[in-house]
Length: 281
Image (cartoon, rainbow, N blue to C red):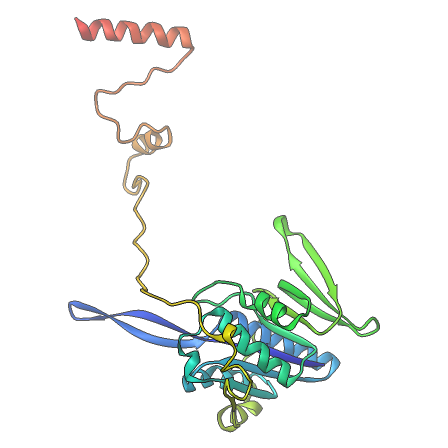
């Protein structure tokens, strides 16, 4: 079986305290769900034979995610890059990935259900549409029915239920957390991951440079940190038992002049009337 796994190098920022100033420190790491997809591909190949290729779109910095894939046992690593892809949106990336996968050849195309940075969850659907193949999303388990020649995918649904889908390859499957636990790198593959050549393809080689749908349609104008959460609730640590009971009854935070009258409606009404009459004098 020929399996292609689409992977992505995520860029994020972490806060770094420098004296009285707080600075942003850039960090780069593989998309976690893409590593799950690699592990799932490796398990299928171990059972049924075949080879696994990892494909990414990005500059030379993105080779790190391909090195990681090679260390996990991937047989081939391909990086797609041209200057036109510097501001690529999801559609442009999916177009490049689809063209590369078609050139490599595949029976099964895997990718993470979503990326950890944008979380758009559209690349898998775009790949299936561009390639004209079936799509199964958010799979938590994959099998191969060799007798029927079908791919079997399991999905989680509400209340702990499961749904099972089958399709004839070639197909696109997006992988959800729980499909497989990414393995530690095998020591035998460390040298291969560090020194094996990563193939590089350009948009021109894929015939995409002059294709109008290839050009990016999305522009990021601004990235801001999330707003701090508003603190809600009442602090109960250190309160007496009486005050804690008042919080549970919804009486906390009331002004001293507020009184509550418990009991039957007619009895409470009588007590309120008497209280108002005394207050009015």
